[in-house]
Length: 278
Image 1 (cartoon, rainbow, N blue to C red):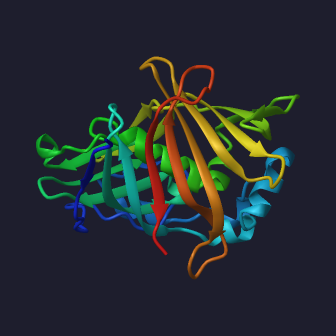
Image 2: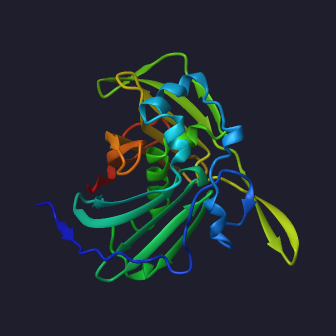
Image 3: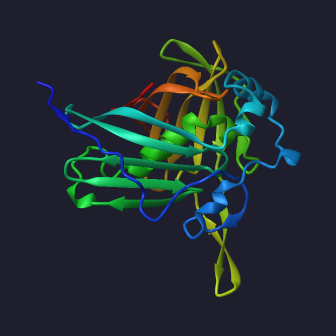
């Protein structure tokens, strides 16, 4: 019999850090000055979408709508999977900053209150981790980055530092045809102020490679494979039921599934299912 653990959820604030706005450039260490994330894309030098990704941006709301989208907030019911097949139900609150490559997730459990974030490849977890009984424990970074990638795909694809390569031949997955677009993620420069001196640090991305699968029915990039060969970590994340966000023009998935994977981008056990609340 499948075991279910149902946890009540309390929304908690992330102590000591408030993410505001967005920006996509070399900057100071955001953990020292989070207000730097309040900048948006430079309208005078907006990146030009590469031809093979333009349709995916258009179907998700279009470049002007995404350029105006500096912040996304939503709550979701999360069904996390234990290795033995048991299910753990909880609720997470998400705040995403598309142009800052930043995401914050908060949750409150009966025994553990947690908040974690990824800001430009830098990960921080705060809370009573030793009391956490969620099957997601130990994989919050991978979980958060998977959500960031699938929800803000148009902004991720417009990062000129990311090397994108369109494969010449489509492929069929679970009865659907996709156009694979491979990605390589370079290190990111972070500038920090140390005693009135600026220091530049290269931050290695957690995911060094990936593949975006562009649906041939509707050109959403609704499935993404992420790989970290050094750590032996591989994920597949899928988005479903794309719809407009409240008070906005961009479209994001209303349902997300995250799966374990392998170097060949095969589906493994499901890690979590995320259902956005209306």
